[in-house]
Length: 399
Ligand code: NAP
Ligand code: MG
Image 1 (cartoon, rainbow, N blue to C red):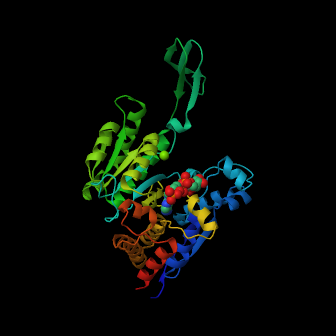
Image 2 (spheres, rainbow, N blue to C red):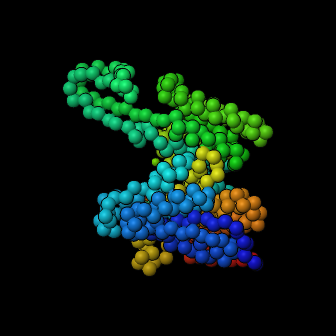
Image 3 (spheres, rainbow, N blue to C red):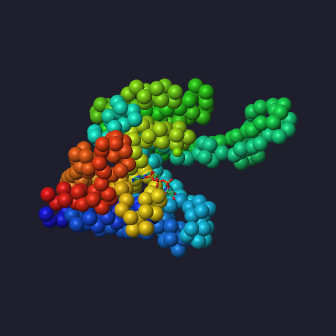
């Protein structure tokens, strides 16, 4: 089979530990032998980030902006233990956060559904895609401990030192307080990302808030989505797609009742919680993909939602075989290729990416799978090692 030629490059970000081992295998065994593709590679391993004082992460993000397609391996976000383990100069921030801040995009988390693999929520047979507004709210809040009697107020002071103040509570005894914020710019970007994603993927969109209680704060989310929808309404109708705002409690009930097949735009905290709930409901972290998309839908960075799988890496370091699931990482590659194909109008590349996904799904449905998935199927289900799984997929691509 002759190699598929690709006109424009893809930004490839390598990472850490077991995820890196798998990453190199995918790149060298499943992609580069079949696709004549220029990769602009950045090593985002913790060692390389430390060496460059994390400059390499910003460089990578800026290159994604230029090329419009990036694919990223899982990376270590250092905690105190990691700082010691790698003798790091400092506790660097999460690379995903740095890249997101530069691209100003939204993260969409989507399960890969495999018929053979049982789900905890049995009737979810189409993906529930969670979009999390990853800005502001409790993640950028200020807290205060109240240790004596007194008044807690919320105060806004404008540029001319004019103040608007509200009484929050008159404390008679000890307690706690909190204030948080969001910006319209960020909510507009979030809304645009969501409408574009729904349109590209042809799935309906729901936004959830608690605007009955937060009649200004959450209402602002609803109003901004309504405003952005004006620009999408005719395209949505043409594609028989719908957009709806629902109360968060109502939306949670719908999630359990419905069988999936929609995009759910969540506020920051809701998205944090719901993406873990949905991941668990669908099964394994090894089947959860994640994409960061710019508000205009043109820039896409794909990755697996899981981490570097440290426990498996420790085994690998000892020379032992592991059974690490590469599906979410393979889908990160196939989705990046699909986006490149769409931007370049490269039909052959699109077909290759689709074929790669189909082969993965068929392989799992035939009962060849890694241990994490076998455990979900039950005690009678056999499993294969990481290397055996790669061999099976590689053989299928070639035949
Ligand atoms: P993790 O790497 O996702 O692994 C947690 C556990 O989930 C593993 O120990 C393993 O369970 C199972 N698992 C996850 N992915 C799997 C796969 N592909 N195949 C089979 N099993 C899989 O999360 P973590 O252990 O909390 O974090 C490890 C490192 O990853 C941390 O340094 C963290 O900073 C980083 N991280 C990075 C990202 C990212 O770059 N996007 C995301 C999350 C975490 P068993 O051990 O039971 O087999
Ligand atoms: Mg969480």
